[in-house]
Image (cartoon, one colour):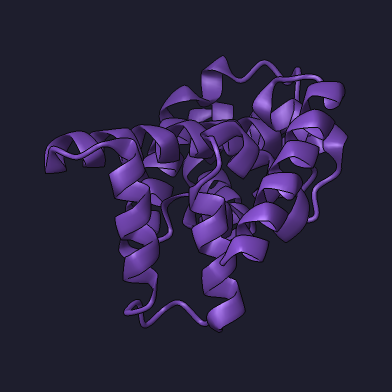
Length: 180
């Protein structure tokens, strides 16, 4: 595994950029895919958003200042790309964001790439009821087992605010699962 600082330097130099980008994609594509997939739910949509994310990273690598980890910066891009994708999708379909979330969860049952059981499906339905920020914090903490400090860097918010969002998300999910 190439050191992050060295990778960034290689990405910024034209003669090593192509090879460095290949290393970047191979190193981070799976983790970013699953982060995106947990937001957009659909496999095909996740692939599209992942591709858009890497295009943005490639085009904007010169703007990366190194004030955060490269992965945190890419996570932020992936998160923003995912949320933008969902807003555009609901607008194109002429439905509310809420209706889109409900349809996405319903479509999970017929998704050949969804390997969850009935409990996983209920959890996804509960997650669909959360505001975007709470859903993001919950999925990053629960599914991806990220530390609050890492989430804080990726979402550019305080650890205290994240803990509060996570706690609220857990309470809402528990309440949803009890009523179902």
